[in-house]
Image (cartoon, rainbow, N blue to C red; front, side, top):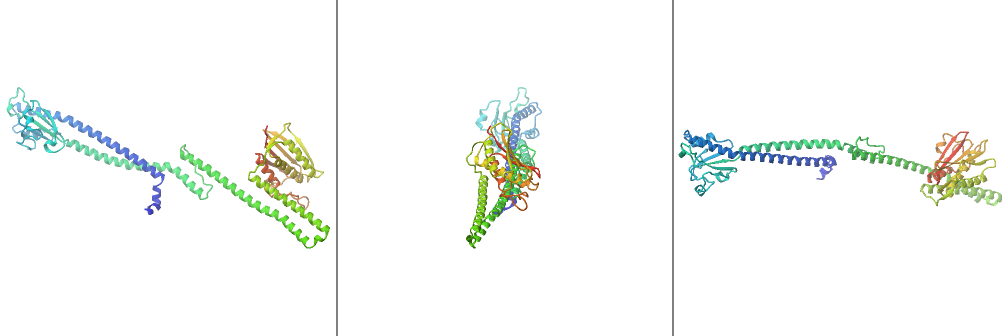
Length: 498
């Protein structure tokens, strides 16, 4: 049995298609058999009923003919021959009886000079003049059928009443009707078997057609499970459940593909993040280790040298602290960690950020605020994170936007469609076309990250990544527009409460 279960053809027979085809075929077979039984019973009832209704009139017609033949004087010389020659087609046996019930003639010469077994002598002794009595055929010859006993009464003008028997008994077995029914039954059996076979083949054929879309879905599912994320089910031009299943499968496959792509991108970013973080942390750690070795080799004995090395070590430690804090901030934002939020006045927050940025900016770099709306722009967010977002953009504009001839940074506040918009505009060298798609990548620093020949601009390349993550945390956006030698504009939009 296990061999059959493992066979491919056996497993295919257990599929839903073949099971449904089998169920439909059994139902079709059941209804065909019921119809055949109904037709056979109807025809059988009709034939037997017609034969039973026709038997008495034919028996009486034979009695009338016998009386006429006897009473006209031209009666038969041999009653046996008369019965054989005039026997109706649906009458099997005819007996002529005397008044005591003894058989005096029959068409097959049976029971001659014997009492008729269907009735007792007492019946004939007390029988009325006009007898018409039915009886079972089995009482005479042990076969199924009907019998009819008729009295033969001579009319008043009968010329030879002495030659007329007293009774006529007729037997019929309905053999022709039974033969007809046997033929009908055989035809019904053959036609039913033919209809069942043809019906089963048609059901299997159309079931296969109906299940073809489901096989497409199954094939696509297997391909998807095997790793083919581009697998889709062709459009099905129907409105049934299988079409809905195919549509749902395509939507699921699309989401799986997007999720997998996002996961791959996330893993790629994570690998790059770890690699860049390791590289960025390696530099200050290596510097601290080198400074420590210098101190151990005797530099601590020279106060001036030791003071200079300690200051350098402090700078590297602060740089490493800043880098670690930024990495922690990004990790919390990636995890969806949102600190306590409150209603903030964005205008007041921007003014405070400008004041702090002016303290750290060179004197020649001017930072101005422009309000294009009279509304107090209230937002719901965490104050520290919004302040960090503004300081990142201002610090970025000061470091990269005040390098040209026009050392001016402008902050523009507007409101559009219930969203506050902050634009930080500088007039620096702009961002190169190759760098523009990557400026929000972590640890990315473009070709303008140098301040003068070989002098790097301070920074870790995480500021814009943090700013973008903060904006997205509060359902906002951060975009950039820049042209080389024409300056750069960073635009932040955040939903307003009013």
